[in-house]
Length: 182
Image (tube, rainbow, N blue to C red):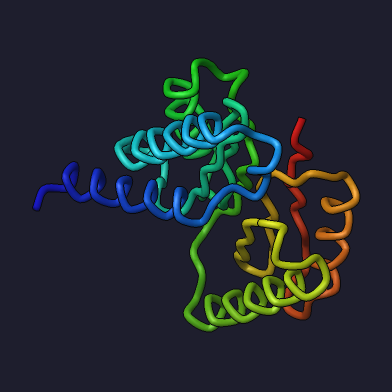
């Protein structure tokens, strides 16, 4: 199977997952708008997977009312710029792309990967326990740095999520890139 075909299947699977999981803010959108945003997110993810310098496998893509949010860690500014450019082509311009990418250069040792995975699991559990199942926050942890991204309804939810992340063992820095939905 060629790489392009693999990427398209991955994009299709991501689309199915987006549609199956539902949107965190679906109550403020029509069914048509939800489908439009899911389609936009899927097309953006496919574009990231096909872009040579953007790491589509490590970037979360969300869409809300025509705005695309890119969240995740990238190794360098070049990868960040490539991801933003690929998303802008799909989203109808750079003004429709929200950059929640964080540059953290270098790889991780196996022990650090395990530590980060453990910290992320603690963070996810704490967010669900303290904010409830209804809030959807994308999380990632790399080299002790936590990234929170996604759309939330209230500024208070964004603030509370950041406070929760700061209290998690194994997290030394928090990048709170949550966006309060318009």
